[in-house]
Image 1 (spheres, rainbow, N blue to C red):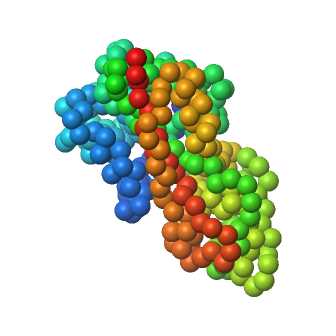
Image 2: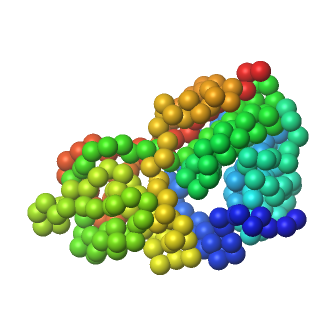
Length: 275
């Protein structure tokens, strides 16, 4: 199958992403554990935006039939090795080359924010409509993505070397003006959204993915707007779980909160096709 010309991930981006995932820790794999509990008793699952097939590999021991969808041939090159039983389809999420009323579970893991940010709003609605189409009645959409950190500032301690990294990030970030202020010594005041983007994007600095990551944000969805998007296409939100504490990301950088309450930066939304 041919590579989609509009794919965000070419060979260099896909290779970088695969190498980076080798250093994932337990927190990076938390989303898979959360999704897996909904797969018990599931016969057919499709992972839309499956990449190299990590979740397909995990789910295949619990599900009879697994499919992987991605628009990038490069990103799917590891699927055959990770999950030989998976059926792989190269297509866009807003035009799924999949059977209707077929799947018990449809997964989108950190995919829809890219459609929302890099595409048009109607592409997001079309993608959700396509997900509903391929689900059987009673089937579930497991939607994992970035939670908007919201307005306001926090004060944090950040070691000098990480403060320098923050300055580099702010100088390169294009999606909005990212800027902190120094309060005293190594204590800074920083917008919640800027802190979240820095802590989740610094690894992409000076990498093949820098340009893309500096032109998008990891502050994307709220619960209210997510429910509105789902309602608009006829999917009913059933459960909402927030996870991945931002304070743990800060601690990995040697930092800590001085004032302001930490928050969860990801969510899992379970939506059901009722008819």
